[in-house]
Length: 312
View 1 (tube, rainbow, N blue to C red):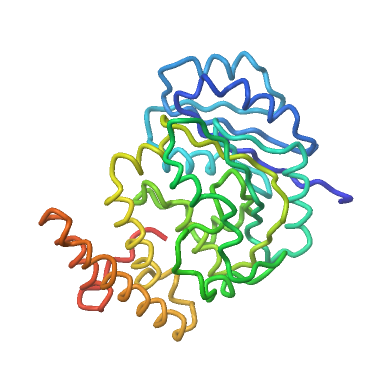
View 2 (view 1 turned 180 degrees about the horizontal axis):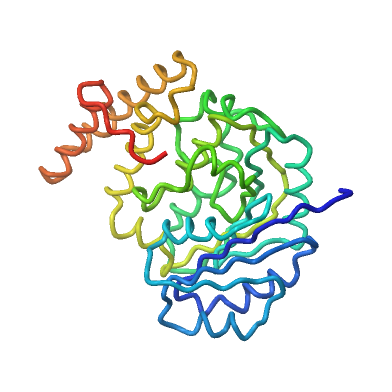
């Protein structure tokens, strides 16, 4: 690249003291020359904030505030970022030194690319649900066909779109996003606790191309204290409902109204099938109130009571 546009590394932090040294090493080893570092501390109760302040990172901005919660803290980071591109880096994850350079190079090839993602490595220790970890590996291989650049609509039409794993892009750490994307599609939706990233990737696909780099450029750490593990471990049924909520948002939310009518109808039918085969079947094993939620979702999918548009 002849020029290096500004990239904002957005780091939402909450009680991550044990990972701060690894985080600092990742930042210092990054080879991309034009960075600003946005650190948003979500009212940590450990030494996270003091460790970050003592590091004196160049071009860094540390923001503190009352406890916002996971997704609102992501959005706060975005509100402070000024770069052409956004690169999230979670406190317990790492990047390869040339990750940002390679992702920016891909994005700069075509201004229609709104999102670039790569392969990522999983870091985990026992005790972890191995079945869960296995399902998270090599996400990109679950597309029927993935190219270095393709329209997001093409991915939404992929035959494997409704097959698990549903998030075939990955987590924010292995994604680079053009900042102007958020002006068009809105911020992350705090209504989602577990799948806010998936729902955002789908919104971006409606309007933009997606770039893919077939290299492992990031590492995603899985451990028992992180939000992902806690959400899945404590409320697997809630996570299941979030998947249904994502599909319902595609059908009813105004963001997705620009999708071809044939595609939206196909998605609606797929959702109904999922709810009938998986959701209703599961009602037998659920408490009455949970079963009622499944029936309500099915009713919405059939069009009886359209869901409100909500956030973008």
